[in-house]
Image 1 (tube, chains in turn orange, purple):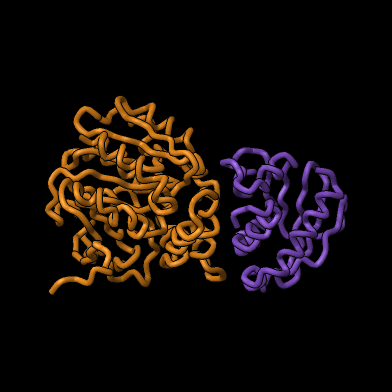
Image 2 (cartoon, each protein chain N blue to C red):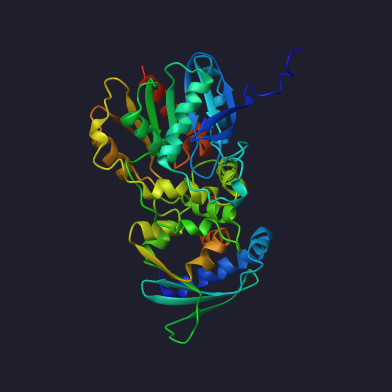
Amino acid sequence: MNAPTAFEPIIGRYLTIEVAGRSYRIYVEEAGQGQPVICFHTAGADNRQWRHILNDAELTSQYRFIAPDLPWHGKSLPPEGFEEEEYLLTTEVYVETVLKFVEAMGLENPIYAGCSMGGRIALQLALNNPEPFKGFIAIEASDFQPAWYDIDWFHRPDAHGGEMGAALVSANIAPQSPRAERWNTQWMFMQSGPGVFRGDLNFYTKDDSLVGKLGGIDTSKTPVHIMVGTYDMTCTPEDAKRTADQIPGATLAVMDGIGHFPMSENPATFRPHFVEALSKMD
Amino acid sequence: MDVANLRARFEDMGDQLSRRPHLLRLGALFSETVLIEVDGNEFYLTFHRGLLEKVTEGPSRQTPWRFALRVDSASLEKFWEPIPEAFYHDIFGFVKTGRGRIDGDILALVKNLRYFKEFMALGRKKEAVQ
């Protein structure tokens, strides 16, 4: 049976992986054929941030883009027993999730692309676990970002953490980005499960384990390309430059007129920068 | 921008607010006084159920307020450009760049953050992106 032409080319499926001794049912979207590229979303959101890249006919003719929802995010369920648990993501669990995901998907030499906390993990993987990967695209990524807000704001019994989170992250979206996509970007934060954004920020704003160690990344084996938007107030262009400067051979692209969620908030502005990033992985 | 112009701007923003049903819905539980201090000049904006009831000029040590936004007029003018430059596009940019300060009951602000940010953006010139 032929699929109706009105369908987008994106296919969504589920798989179960074991991480830190626990079972997680993961939702995965993918599109395209060729070099695999795994695409990781920001804190407090999900794989819909990558929808424009997965729907890009020219890019999907060369690349197989695979975008999971992390556990607790989007359509990936939290683990059994979550109801009595405080969700606090750690670097170790995130890294293991990526490695188990690559293994479970049977991917050979994938490019890793991640934004914000996903970009931070790109740097962790590049430093400590580069073997399975062809290269790293670290978007809105830096070695460390202490919080300029109180992460506990986003999980309270007397207020809607998702709405507050969306209103806060709107500070990181460029006013030039198309209105519809700015609001689509915020909607994911509005929909985020209770305490999930806070739990993501726990590791993102507290783990400074990369500080002083980025010089150990070997970009001759796995290239690292860092991208940053000029309207990003969380990971500023200065933060990204400081980070890139510490990695011998790393490249940096500063994207004018775009913020912390480039692939989601302004696909047209992001696209040429992402094409350039992919070309640097060869 | 002088004090009279600023006061007129805030009052105009209040008029615009009254014609924005989605903001009145978002601000339905917001009945607070907010201090906006520009170049040291105090403006007390009193909101009632999402409507801007009155703008009172300071200085005053007796007017209670819930939270305050303190900024210089040059930064506020940049914020009110149709497409503000980076770091002047959001009230938190004032804090990030050290050009302003937000203090008081920050949680009251955060609980009404979208409402208050969109109210502040009503000061943008007509072609502004809202």
